[in-house]
Image (cartoon, rainbow, N blue to C red; front, top):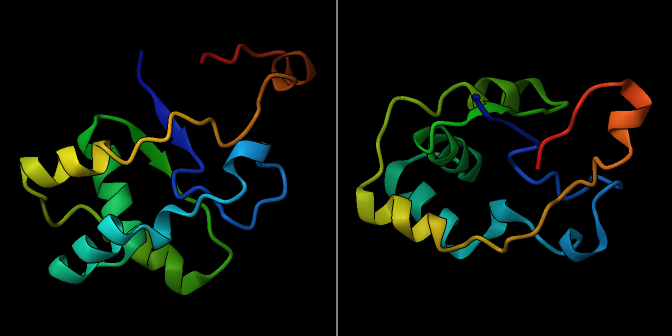
Amino acid sequence: MHCTSFGPLTAAAHTDRIEEAKGLNSLEDPVIKELATKYGKTPAQIILNHINHLGVSVIPKTAKTTRLAENFDWYDFKLTDEEYTKINGLNKNIRIYDFSGMAELHHFPIFY
């Protein structure tokens, strides 16, 4: 089975986020911002690179053309193992979106 990350950048403005996740914004995390500065990348590119490093496909969404182009420029660099581990440590163990009702609505299985 292959996993795909839906909403990998946590969509801080998204109104359907669960209550525990409403204050989270991974793009503003100090660790992510520090790495973005170090590598000359955006925070989004650092996050997308990390997710891909985990072997997960990503589907970043944006309404802005400039950010869409940026979202495709995350693969030309590699963080150190220590940096990937540091990002792993940011895990809040919180699901951002609640898909529990979608399986019945759209007739497809949702795996957690």
